[in-house]
Image 1 (spheres, helix red, strand yellow):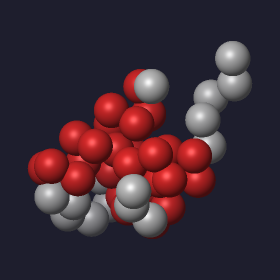
Image 2 (cartoon, one colour):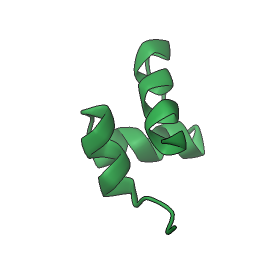
Image 3 (cartoon, helix red, strand yellow):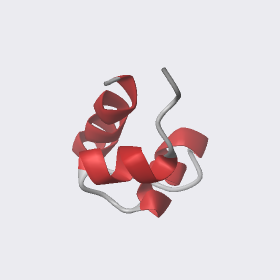
Image 4 (cartoon, one colour):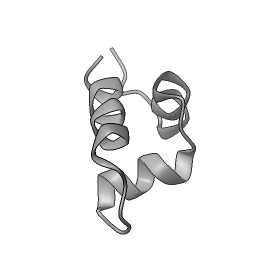
Length: 44
C-alpha cells in the first residue's frame, strides 16, 4: 500500500496541508490535540 500524501492526511485530520507539514517538520507550534489528530491520520 502506498504512503498517504500530505493532502490525504490533511483531509482525514480535517486540517490544512500546511498544518500537516508543520507537524511533520516541527517548524511551527501546533496545538497538541491537532498534532495528535494529524499523527493518527498518518498511521491509518
